[in-house]
Length: 166
Image (cartoon, rainbow, N blue to C red; front, side, top):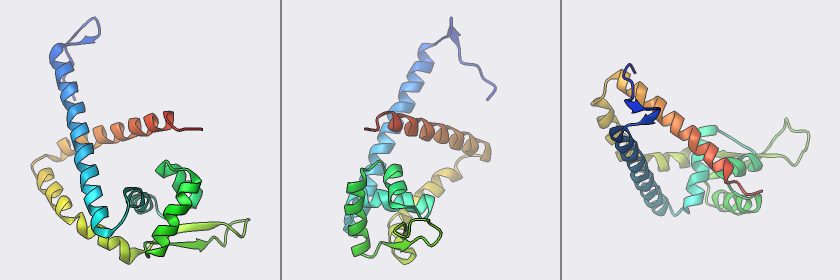
């Protein structure tokens, strides 16, 4: 980006502050709408929000140990045990022994592919809408937006880590 933010003595001008507030407000509205969408998807599938969150972590990061999944989902290990019991009982995940692990009790949690297709089907409308929205932007604009969203995601992860209870 070639433009420079106008400022006086390093302080962004009023227009820049307003634009920043607007971005933050838009991100809050987006978070709220995505949470509502996730809640409705979970309700259709008879999944709790936390269960759907754990399935999303597995979809993004692949098979994980229960403790790694708990860390990435921000859950206490005892809570994770209950989540995994529900997800396994209902056929969403499997726990498999890890033959590579030194501890023979070690397991890996894997999402069941056929079941995760049910989740993706419910998000199909949103995915189609995103395709339509992205079609209105140039490749360069999408690259800029992707960079912005990655940075915001990284800052969100840092903020969440800062709030992690010991």
